[in-house]
Structure formats: C-alpha cells, structure tokens
Length: 142
Image (tube, rainbow, N blue to C red):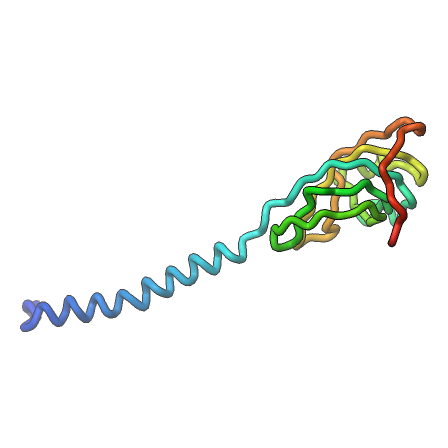
C-alpha cells in the first residue's frame, strides 16, 4: 500500500483541529477539576486557654479547651470569621499525646485547622502557663 497525500489538505487540517478542541477542553476540565479537589493547606492559629476536660485516649484523645477569642479565624471557604471565646474539642498531634495536660491546666497552644480531616482541630504545640495567668475568657456558650 502506498501512502498518498490527501486530496484536500485544508479539510484534513480543519478536521484535526476540530478533533483536538474537545480533547483540549477535556484536558483543561480535568486540570481544573484536579485543582479544585486539591486539599487545602491547614490554617495555623495560636491562642491560650483553660483545659476543661480530657476525653478518650491514644489517637482518640481530645482536650475540651475554653480558648480566648480568635480574631483572625477563617472558615471553610477561607472567609474571615472571628471566633469568640468558647470551649471546643481539640485533637493532639501524636508526639503530644503523652504530654496532654489535665483538666484545670492553663496553656498557650498552637493548632491547625484541617477541614477535610478528623480531628479538624489539632494541637501542634503546647506550653503550660502558670496557674496565676490571667486569661481573657468570656462566658462559655458550649
């Protein structure tokens, strides 16, 4: 079989271009979809609070902490959403599980917010504060 040049090369070029457009659109759509489903980087916050309770153990250990207000907090959509002082449950990074403070302990701590993981709020650093430390805690509505 001998290959021959097409009779109408301009039609072949137009056909190839037309066939490439849907493929390009599909690839662009997949690229956008991959970008949208990518995990968000965790948000980091630092605050102080009072441990109200410890719940669970090991990887399931949670601290109920009445924390000070967080003026820079951002919601799931990344919008500024200042948070008042309240009690919330926090998980602990694995390396902090053994150092988990008891109820009644005042602490300074840093935590991450990972909206698509459990626990959503995870303490990454903590430091016990002297018991006489004054904390700016408002009445708890938890």
